[in-house]
Image (cartoon, rainbow, N blue to C red; front, side, top):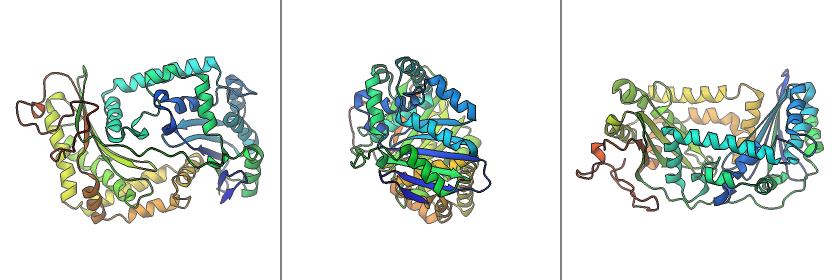
Length: 436
C-alpha cells in the first residue's frame, strides 16, 4: 500500500502476517550532496547525533527508553538521502514510534555530544585513510566525480569536521525535516489503517516545504589515467573505475551482472585468473554503485609492489576480454544466481524489507521494483553483458597506492609508459586510449 498524507509525506505499508517484529524505515532528502564545500561531513555528523538528545530526552534517556522496550534505532547518511530505522516488538510499536518521531523532529545536538562524536568521526576517517584500500577508493571517487558532490566523502575531511558547529548541524537538520521530502515504510503484522493512524499522529502536523527536490550537480569530469599515492606500505592497492548509469537506467541490471561475472565471488574471473591461477593478488574484486544521476563500476586488486605491472596488465586484459568475448552460459548463470541469492538474503528481516521499499520508492522505481529486481537479473543475456561492457568500460580512472621505491618498470618515463600518469591533480587531461 502507498498512502500520501495531506502534508506530502509518503507512507509505504506491507503487512507480514504472524510476524512479531515491526520495522520502520524513515528516509528523507536531501543528503550529503548539499553540504557546502567547506562543511563536507555536516549531514553525516548531524545524523550520527540525531538520537543524542531531544527537547524532552537526554542521550541517556533516549537509550534507556529504547532499552526498556527492546527497540533499536539506527541512523545513516548517504550522498542523496538520510535515513533512520526502527525495529520493535508488535506491542510496543506506538511507544517506539513516539521515540523515533521525537528523535527525528526534536534533536538538540548538545555541545558535549558534538565534541565526542567529532572525535569518533575523525578517528574513523583517519583509520580509513590510513588503509591503502580506503585511500585508493576515496581518491578514485574524486577522480570520477569531481567537481560534483558524488566525489566528496560523505563523512567529510578532518579539516571540515573540525570546523562544524552546532548551528551547522541545526541547518542540516532543517533541510531534511519537510514531510513532502519524506518516505516512511512500515513492514510487519499491522493493519494498514493502524499504520496510517500512527504516522498521521506523529508526523502529520509537520508543515510541507512546497519546494522541489535539491538538485545534484552533474558537472563531473572523469580524469582518465593513473594517479598515484605514495605511502610507506608493504602491500600495494590498485583501484580502477568507470562512470556508468543512474539506478533507473535500463542498463543497470546488466551492469550488476557484469560486475558479478568480473569480480564477485570465488568463481569470478578476477578471482580465478588473477588470484588463483597467476597468484597476483591477496584480494581482488569488482563492484558497481548507482545513484539517481549516475553510477560507477570499480575493479580493485591488492598485490605486492613487485607485481604492480603484472596486476595492471591483468586487470586490463580481463576488461578487454569481457568487451571482446561473450561470457559463457555457465558464468552468466553463476552471476545471476549470486546476485539473486544475495538480494533475497537481504530481505530476511522486516527491517531489510522496509529499507528496500523506501529506497526503491525514493529512487523513482516504485515499490514494485523490489519484487521485479530478481526477474530483471534473470532476463540479462550474454549479449546484454557484452553491450554494456563496450558502452561503459573505456578509459578508466585508476589509482595506485605504492611505496615510493622501487619505481615499477611500466611507469618509468625512461621507457614508453604503458599507463598515462596524472601529474597534476588540477589537470584534466584528454582520456588516453591505451589506459584500458
